[in-house]
Image 1 (tube, one colour):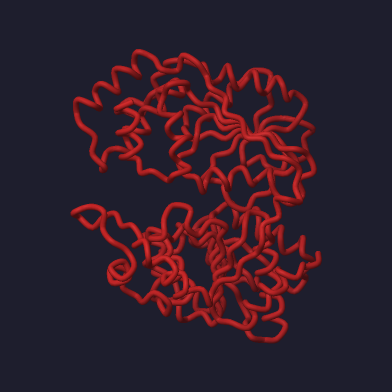
Image 2 (image 1 turned 30 degrees about the vertical axis):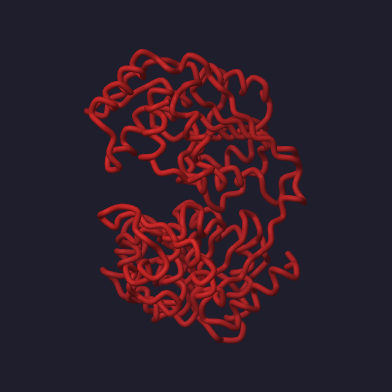
Length: 427
C-alpha cells in the first residue's frame, strides 16, 4: 500500500526524532505509518527490535494483519500471550516486533529482563495510560532504555487535559512536562475540590500547555469526507422506568449522592433501564425485556445483513446469546463472522474499541449508551472507517425517561458521574 503525503511526513518525523506523539482519527493509518517507519529504521540499522504495547485485541487482530497488509516483508510480528512460559518463548523467538497487552507490563518489566533486547517502544492507544496504574509504574523507570518511542492515539483529550501527563511522559520520559505530576498540575490547573482530586485547566494556560509538547506531535488529518454517510439514531424504548427504578431513585435521594459512589449508583440505574439488576451476590434479577424486543425489531429490518451489536453488561450478553432466529458470533469467532453471509457479531466496547476493522458491516446497535465518549466513537469507527463502501447506520437503545437519556445528553459535555446523577435525580 502507498502512503499519502501526510502519512509520509509522519514516517519522516518518527525516523528523525526519538520521541513522537502520533495523533490521528480512527482509520487514518497510524499503524501503517508506524510500521513503515519501523521498516525504514531497521533498514538503516538504527533499531533492531520493537516492543509494541496495545490493548489485547489490537495486539492479536491488528498489528500482525497490518504488517501483511502494508507488504512489509522485513517485519516479523509476534504476540506474547498465554502462560509466562509461552510469553517467554515468544520474546526469545526471532520476531523483530513483539506485541504485549497493557495488563502484562508488570510481568514483563518487574519479573523479567526480556524487555532489554528491544530498542524501540510503541504504545498503541496512549489514553490507556491516563491514570497511571500498575502498567505505567512498571514501564516508567525503563522508558529511557528505548532509543525510539512512539505513542499513538485518536483521542488524546477525550475526557480532559489532565490525562495528557502520563501520555506525554510515556513518549518523552518527562522532558516536556517534568516528572512530578503534582508540580505540573499546579502549573497549568486549579483544583475543583478540597481534596485536590479533580482539576480543571486554567482558562489562559491551555496554549502554554500545548506548546510544551507540540514538538512531539504529528497529526494525521481526518478522512470522513471520503466516506459514505453515517446516520446516528436514538431509539427511545418506552416503559423502561419501572416501579423498581422509581424505588431506587428515592433510595438514592434519601441516602444522598457523593462523588465516590455516584458511578455505582449510575450503573445501577442504567441496569434497571436495561431491564435487569445485579443483586449483592452477583445474580441477575430480571425486570423486563423491552430493549430485547426493540433489538429484535431492528434485527428483523436488517435480516440477511451482517450486524454488530454492542453490549456493556454481562446480562445483556446473556440475553443476546438467546436471541431467537439469529446467528450470534462472539469476538472469539470474528473470522467466522467475517466469512458468513449474515449474522450478528456481539461486541464489548472495551474488548474491541480500538483498531479492529469491521467494515463488512454497516449497521451497529448499542444495547445501552456508553458512558465514555472516547469508547463510543472508537466503537463506531469499527464500521465507519476507510474501506467502508456502504452508508452506515448506528442505533442506540435508550430507556425513555431513565438515566440513559441523561447519559446520551451529557457525555457530549463530559460531565462527571456525580453531576450527571444529581441532575437526573433532581429532574
